[in-house]
Amino acid sequence: MDSTFVKNIHSSWAYVVVALILITLVTSAIFFFTKKELPLWFRKLLSFSMISVHIQFLIGMVLMFISPAVSAALSTGMGNVMKDSALRLLVVEHPMTMISAALFLTVANAKTKKSADINGGTFLLILVAAACVLSRIPWDQWHS
Image (cartoon, rainbow, N blue to C red; front, side):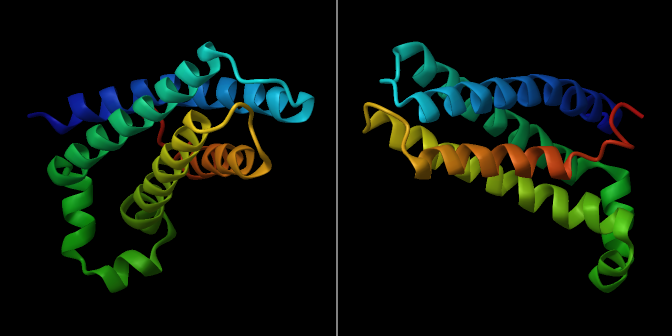
């Protein structure tokens, strides 16, 4: 499988992920601050956001194993990867932060299934997941 093809899928799917997470964040803020009961469509929106992040994670894992850039970075040794901020972002920070975002969204999704409204903890999980995703997107490499 060509790593360029997978990278393009990963970069393109990121638009879906970012859009869904931002929509979920804004709507969850509205429901949190107004203390309204959660409608079914919000629970579905949060589920779709979570699923989109999990799909992005799976595509990213495939990319990690077939990308020549990652292989070259890892061949230099983790000590050199950690010294180089661009390599560290690619090999360590981006994957670990996105795994964290997927975890936070998964927990938030589970909590909304058991609650009639959004409490502070659930809103915080969604907020932190959005912050994780937006902070570790390699904006300078997106679609390059």
